[in-house]
Image (cartoon, rainbow, N blue to C red; front, side, top):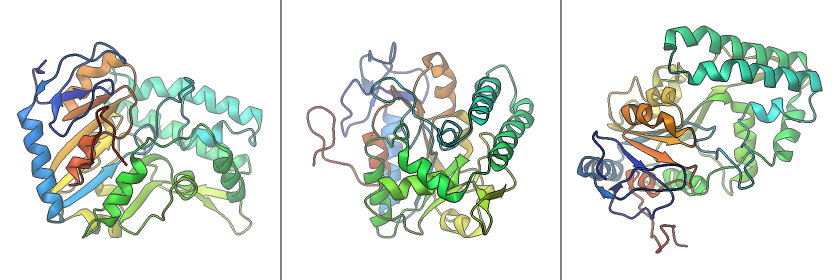
Amino acid sequence: ILLPDSSFVLSPTLPIQHTISAMTVADLNVAGAAGEDPKVAAKIQDFAAAASNGNVAVFLDFDRTATRCLLPDGRRVVSSVAVIEKSPLMSQAYRDKGEECFNTYFPIEISDKLTVEEKLPEMEKWYSTMFTLTIAEGVTDAMVDQIVEDADTLVLRDGVPEFLRLCQESDPPIPVMIVSAGLGNTIEKFFRRVLPFELKPSTVIFSNRLIFGEDGKATGFTQPLLHMFNKTAKTLPEAAFKLVEKKTHCLVIGDNPGDATMADGVDCQTMKVGFLNENLERLGQYKEIFDVVITGDPDFPEILFQCIGHPREMNGHGEAGA
């Protein structure tokens, strides 16, 4: 089924072959028939050629993009902030307040009835409230280490480690900006725990951070706050921006419409890939914003490897071979 616009939808229930196909879905588990989408296929080839010349950069969201949305048993994967908010090391009062804030502000974040301008002060209030409460809770850097070590509901998508490794090992390395409205402290510790290699200087984690004093206790958090609606390349630190400023092609990967602006500020062509993990009633909105929409909370899809010039060998089930 050819879609009526330039976006197309990939469902994990059909094999993803080297020839890119347009797919649509009736729900999370049932995929429609496939047809060719020459515009997207041409764009992928253009990105692969740019990658071979060292002209591609990647902007990658973390929560529910690099990580999964759901565990196999149906539990939700926690975010890089919620892993602290829900930890048994924190007081019950703190955890209750975190849940209350989520129930109050998350519907505002995803509302299609409010403008970005209307959402901005609410997002500032949400993030500032929770970080202030975290400091008041007396959290320490050692506590964050333990929380991340014990977390069994923070899980990378299969394929993400390989994707990061290939970007770092490319010649020249493909810069990856991990731009997250979450918490950089937990993201860094999590990557150190789960990756079989170290992140190199070409991979930058740009996120909110707790600031710890000499006694190890949190004393503040970085400003300005990074949230879902101010994620652009213009907010990157100068050293990070220099890694991407001359790239002609930027691969933008996220799970929220606000992620689509991550490369804004770089004069480049973009390929915007969006994960619509759930709530398929938002498919129309995502198709207007992203070039490609991935549904159903799958592994990192083949299309992303093609865009960095590293297509993988695929078996008959649409999975990467060893």
